[in-house]
Length: 189
Image (cartoon, rainbow, N blue to C red; front, side, top):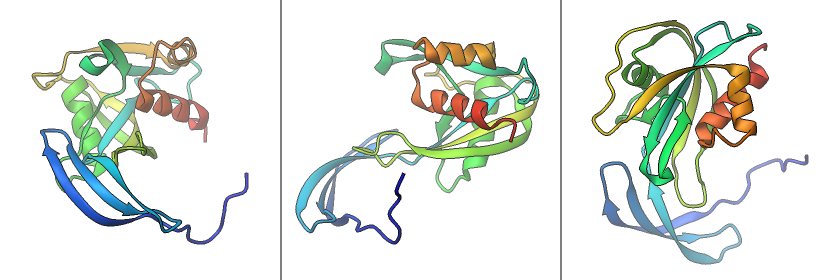
């Protein structure tokens, strides 16, 4: 793969107009100058970012490694999805602190070790949302405290089975797919 070196030309914001501010997101209409000098308008969903965490119940390098997933109701998906614990960053919150908080709130667990896996843009065609993905090990169980609009059930799953669920299309949440595949590919490193 040839990766260009040096700075690539970037788009520049000429003007930004907020048309909606909600509890989770905001919508802006941006007038932009593209890298080739032309201009246009883009609808941009603004999101504060999030952290997600793949909790390992056993050593990640074990042949029978087990993870903790959530079965969570999602209105936009018209049903339940298998997901890793995740949530929105609070103002000025460090991503690792957010991952620890969400792990505790959604599963009741705390981790002795939290490792950053990668950071992804969810849908860069229309949103600036970035999710910081972590792997948690050395879990201590506690009591979950989900938010009132979270309908979740914690599920213990062998990592090998989670990978089969991805292959069969039963795990469809992008952050979860990426976290599982990333951890599976690099867990012995």
